[in-house]
Image (tube, rainbow, N blue to C red):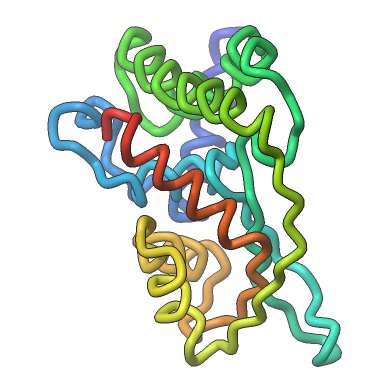
Length: 201
């Protein structure tokens, strides 16, 4: 009946998470006890579809036919134009983030809600900051495969990009490095600076 279907669905999610490298993340029971790094939390959330500070997409390389590269662009409220009140009251986003945290292994609802509230409070705070000083961003940096990781770590040192790259390589079954199309690096860096200051990570 319904119970067995729920068990099947849970197992399916766990299998998918393991396949895509998400299941290897430490459980969120340790989120506040062992202090996971910001990179670990953001990478885990990105892989389950919650782009907090940045979003990651695999897109065709327009320069090389049949090739693909990693597109990294701002996430969170930076491009949404939403107000802090909208973000705070977004129950759909809250529910989705809670679901994602629970899938990542949190055993208690209270630990999940605390983690979600931390992230959303930064979103709301930063949306307020951005409201009066919205900056258009049209910068695009193309980083070659052999230098993309080092350049990202130099351009945006607030994030340990090795953590994200390792996860994506596992997800895609790749061992080789890949080219990166980096959009609006200044906005991503600004947002990560605020996250490091405000989130209890």
